[in-house]
Length: 269
Ligand code: URA
Image 1 (cartoon, rainbow, N blue to C red):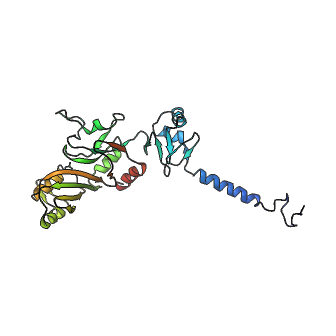
Image 2: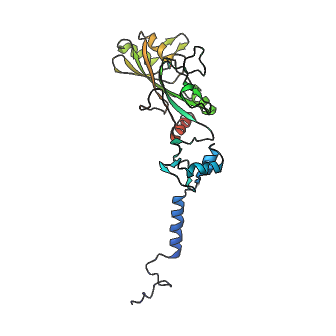
Image 3: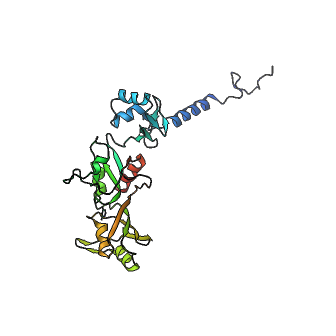
């Protein structure tokens, strides 16, 4: 049997790294597996309103909770800044009990909570609990993206004119819009409640405009187009600040992703 070299450490571990290196490596591995902001999953869920810790443990044990797309196991720790936590496929909100729905509103549905003529409302299209309200409004004939939430603070920030979140519309009008009318729409047109602010306007195909505005005046896009002689025949909102979704079917909704809620908060900070 060969003898260990004379300079081998005591114990004969010539090929093993020194103990301090092994301890440092183990600590680094622990830190990587358990980032500094990580908390137990059941605690994260309980704080966000999914019930007591016990109830949240049961949710996890039932396989209804995923972290970054993988079914979570009890004892899992997560950092909600980086990990995507979902319950039954819905991302958990960034604050306790808050929900954020992105709805693709179909035509003929009103944005008010109750309609005096008995027409369907956007509130009928999303879960009834917790109660939510729409952030801003769309005319009953307008289609497209509408945000609904019970987060009053974020809703106020979005609605505040100071933040002027961009809203983009795909607008079908009568006739092809000539260069002069496009310029007027871009520069601002005179409406009965004052001139409109400069807008981004393009005509991807004849009679179809893409208009981005950051004001939220009543029937603004319809009135702008009317003012330049091109009444609107179809109006679809395709973007609200950082939110867009080409695949969301009319009449359906989805939860906002955590990073979408953060992007909205950042855009209105
Ligand atoms: N502008 C309008 O004219 N109608 C809407 O619903 C939204 C913007």
